[in-house]
Picture 1: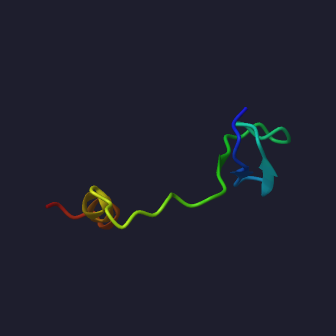
Picture 2 (picture 1 turned 90 degrees about the vertical axis):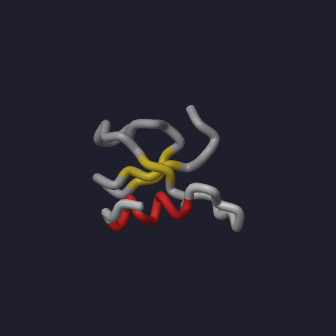
Length: 54
């Protein structure tokens, strides 16, 4: 069991477990990723999201 709240996108419930106790689907973190001004890999992540190459 993790210490952060997780979200089941299938039936829209919140839990602390890695799988939803209601439907059994995998849960995702309910919080966004931590922001950093000095993000060394942000450029590459944005390029991957857009589908372009360097």
